[in-house]
Structures are given as structure tokens and as C-alpha cells.
Length: 98
Image (cartoon, rainbow, N blue to C red; front, side):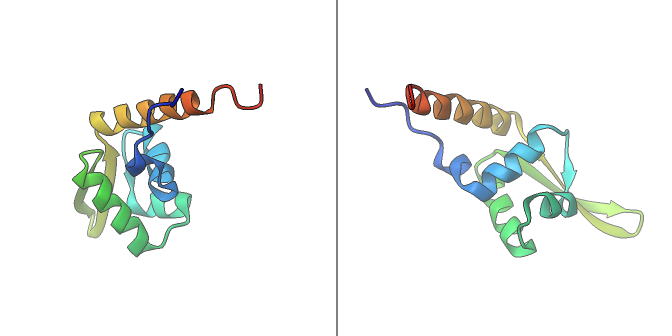
């Protein structure tokens, strides 16, 4: 019996790393995410764009004092997508090694 397919947008390793880091905080700045994921700035930006286009994340640009700062957070849709991804992945892996 085939398991339901996982969300390919979430399944991509870099986006999964971004989403799991954001899941445990209200928001994070881009520097924190870059350090936690090990992604280059360009790669991080590219993946954040995909997450934002899907409605999974919001990206806000502003200033902290006089320094520019980009803040990212998961949307309710993004949180639900990550929880659903986990459930589907566990379902897909159930029975392996039994």
C-alpha cells in the first residue's frame, strides 16, 4: 500500500533545515539562519523566496538601530506543512526494519 506523498517543497534538505529552525522560534534573523544551516547568503535567499512564495514563511526587512535586518518567521500554513510533512514521512517509513 503506497503512503501519501510528502511535500517536495519541504522535503528539500536546505528548506527543511530552515523550516525546522524556524519552527522552534517566533522569528529569526537571516544571520542566525545562515549560521544554523550553513547555507551561503545567496542560497539562503533563494530558498526563503521559495518558502515565501508558497506562503510558508514571511520575510520582513527593516532596521535594528541603523543596521539593516531581515527577519523570517513561519506562517501558520508553514507550521502546518511541516507537521504534515513529519506525519507523512513517518507513515512512509512505518514498517521498515520490522
